[in-house]
Length: 476
Ligand code: GLU
Image 1 (spheres, rainbow, N blue to C red):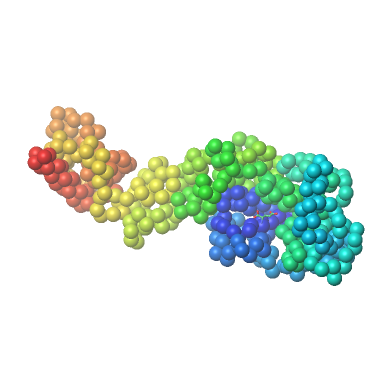
Image 2: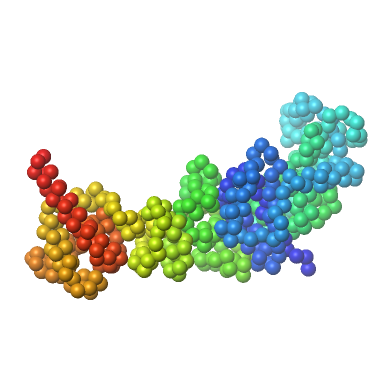
């Protein structure tokens, strides 16, 4: 039985964006599920647009997504001799011919064809002239069948193809001697023994010519599977300008690799009603039948939902490690791994859709100085809060234990001293006092995490702040 081989063939002209990441993931999952090989080929023949740093970024993105490839990375630019040899072979077998038509005469021929109601293709002037290498400046064209369907059974779109009469003989080598993209792709795929080409539907248009090249080179055609476009919430094709599309950017925004893989694989692929897929699940179950034909909508809310799901599933060490760079950024310095911080991270799982958000929510624990949220100060650190904060501070100094039970008792006592004030009326001023803002996990847990000494200090500072506000209100 032939070994199944897929490949991912990115052009290193930008970061690894969502569409390419999905192509990589589908190829990876299919090969792994079939017990085959997944190859990586960098299509770097466009020297003006290809850059080494982008190649590195693509590889790094793939590593981060957990998509390992088999064998060495192949660079298309290093295979030029093979591409040229294939052209020579096609010339020798008569499947290709030299064409020394000028650009102008080709254009004029196309216009004539259009005017006569034809498809506007090259008129085949040199097709039967049997020009030799000394025919002057020339291109090399592939001799296509004159009529009949060049078709294929696409693994996603079913019967596909184009009638040969609608196509002109295509250039496969430019007049400066460089091979054209479609030739390079086919020669590489043949040499790499690729059995399944899975790629974006934007390559459907190239497919006919590529298949004709397989035929002309006497090679077996691979199975072709074209994957529908990814569109945004407005149904528009994702664009680098409008949408956040690079894998690196998602990572920086605090999305987990597991969540991104899961989100990406569901862009145009499904399996029953299942929503959760790990790479391991895909290894065991991915199949091309699950790919749909309609454009796949990328819904950011779904990514957030998945991210939260996976954040909740991480064990404490893993979570700490992954959130660490974000904590460090938020703190502005290295951060100590303490039981209190671990506890806080655990409490924040429920409230965080990204690791960045988690780090932001932990800010009051990471930094000594609080940033007071102005609105929360206005609302909760009013003159009326002063006696409450003072009571809390006084009792907190002599509390038997800085633990939830004693803290809860403390709040009950403060409430009793202030005409059975509702606990929320105590908790909110205290929360703003010790965290700077109106949102945090439960107040007792929050106080425990902050610790007694720091909590007392922050209560004192908040009391001073309220006093200052009262003073300045008097002056105004
Ligand atoms: N290099 C092409 C791209 O980045 C892929 C070509 C292919 O998969 O056949 O879109």
